[in-house]
Length: 81
Picture 1 (cartoon, rainbow, N blue to C red):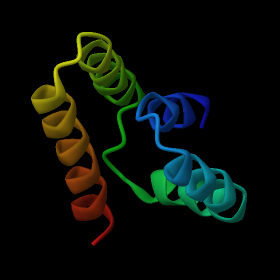
Picture 2 (cartoon, rainbow, N blue to C red):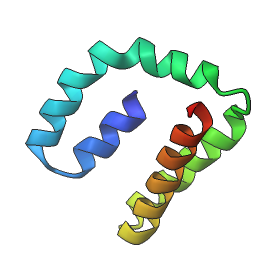
Picture 3 (cartoon, rainbow, N blue to C red):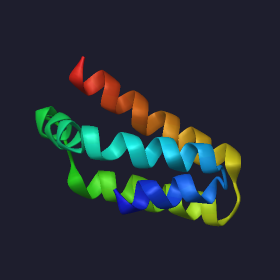
Picture 4 (cartoon, one colour):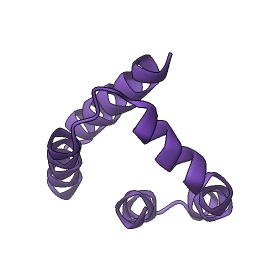
């Protein structure tokens, strides 16, 4: 969660920070359970994806950061559908 909050903070948008801070406590357990439902969950691959996202943000490569985020969210959605 700390990584995700840091990404939200990096957007420098107080509205997003407020939404995130209000959203996370209510759905944290659901997010954990959702990840456990994924039969193909690969923790190492997940950490690698998050590292690549961090690097893209640090490099201010918005296209790469958006693509990585989209890929991650799409794969989560498809894995539980």
